[in-house]
Image (cartoon, rainbow, N blue to C red; front, side):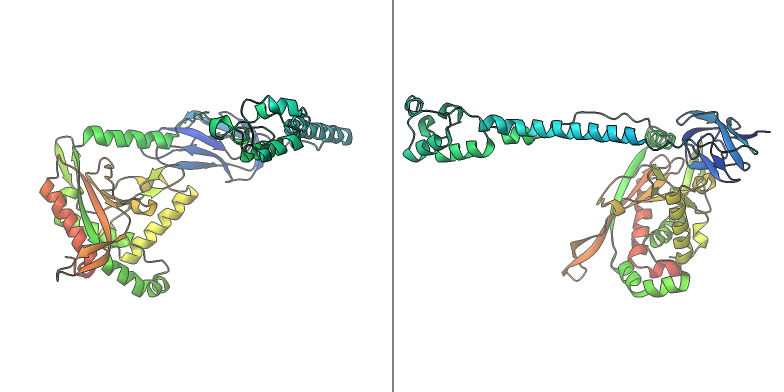
Length: 423
């Protein structure tokens, strides 16, 4: 009896998906729990495993089609035998025919390439009388060169004063065979277009970004942070940290800690609008934007305020691995009270990040770059500086609150001891 392959539950509020690609073909043998097809939802790509071992007998839907939860994807025959669809190698006479056709095509290409040269080699011999009839006189050296090669002066483009041929003109003509080699070698401009349907994830990203612009009164405030102390801490303790905790000490854990400190001092930045109410969150679920081949996703570090730097780095590393492998679950992406986006990894020096609804603020990190800075003692030093951008919803966050929150983050980053003292 055939075993049906159905679209599984895809998570809260997700009722539809798109067939991204089939990993197996009809007639192919599959094992139980072996991935059969990839479904693309609004947030993640989900693999559907085989419910039993057997032969995949039919595919009910094709790639690119939309399916609802519980819909039939295909069926498996547990007692079936796999069919062989591999093409047999060509027979001997077929191979010889292919070889002859290839040789003929090669000869045709060679003949087209050599044709201009043959035409040039059969140039008409020019007599002294034709040289005398030339429109402009030629210097003796040029005339001798033309006579030796039997050229027609009227066919050579002259660049000398008064339309006179120069020796360089004749030599260029001989070198190129009278052809414009640049015009021949230059490939035609490619004006073709490729039309590709937006993936479900890309469509959802576009919808959410437009929703943020249409709904929130979005504003951005900027500041800059001196990364000297964080760089010094990482340089001194990175090896010991990795040996002790089994994970590398990156920048993001410092920024998560600094963000939490700013959110604690200014609770409105961690709040959300719900109708006519403002919901203040007493916990800190920090989303960390991760770029993938399919688009930007934001996995969430739950209760980040309870984690150490090592705990945050481990969570980020696990999410990055799952994002690369396409294993992020919907539960990894849902919720979040605040987001951090690092455009600096792509070389961005300054940008204005867009809110991640329904959150009310997002922090943008950027490239660390040495700049001359005036120090408190009046000296000028080259310091590793990073611009910070805090975009916020002005409906519930005042400008003074946004600036205060960003300054608190800056102070914490410039003096990491504040993280230990919670201040």
